[in-house]
Image 1 (tube, rainbow, N blue to C red):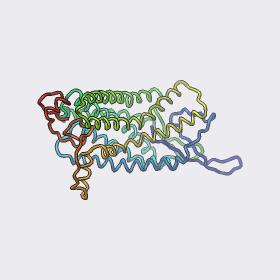
Image 2: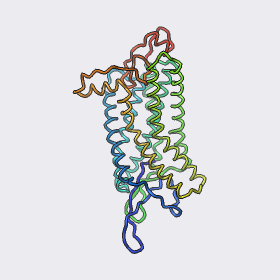
Image 3: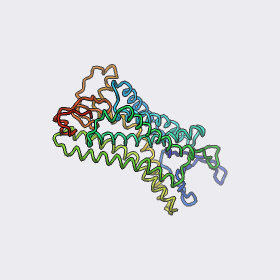
Image 4: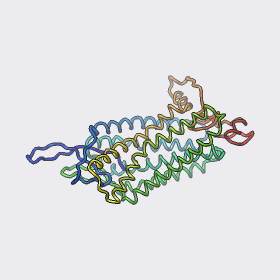
Length: 374
């Protein structure tokens, strides 16, 4: 999978005059050019590169800021802290490839060589896989702490952190290999230009879709639905409970909205190719436009997480202000954050590791008289 690419190529008319017409990139081999020459999205060669550059700028500085703040955090890091840090690293590496795709979209062809073509495509695959696996890890960790009453300090021992992060990265790096194998430079007919394209076979693409999206998404939804059910049973948490639910839906909702349309279209296109379905020209054009828009939507997810932290995580915003000299003395009232689910810890990034009073422990942790690190 790669970002949408649109452009123009020079064609010669019957009278010998040259003109420029849009050429198309067939991502999944389902277009019938003898039957339908699809129209491209209006001004896509301007809009898409602009969107990629904006995503690059926001994602680069936002994720770099998250990484720097996490590196400055004092004390040992919990497992969820490490998931957040590594998610930011994956997003940072990915957004650094967006300028290449932006230029490719603007020009209408790939001009950076086959090595960068394979590397940028590999980075996309690794990022897509690692992102959802890190989100799944965060959801499982929160599920164990909130519903099973596990102590996050015992979960976050060094051995567990190394094993968890290692499994995610090894799995993501291996599942990204098909992008290197099948991605290559393909010449544009009638020109000396090349496109960076190529997809794995249908069966393998379907397996990747299940392993890298459907299964992790199922785990995420199960964990957060369980957390939702648990929190609804504690009316005494009041406003803190409502804030928790808002952030849960924000994180999960943004991810689903970003990637579900693309994966849905990809699955449907795989079925179309497998069954050799005959589609109308209008349907083919709609699919091409849908793939283009949904791919752009998916890539914007790499710059959204820092924005969520700033607007919805009180302690992250406080730490960010402290890192800026002019705001160093700014004081901000700390309120409960959705990601910690406690009355004393308000940030998934900068948890205080304080003990809960016995009353709160009875409500959230289920252990009378003993505090619990959440």
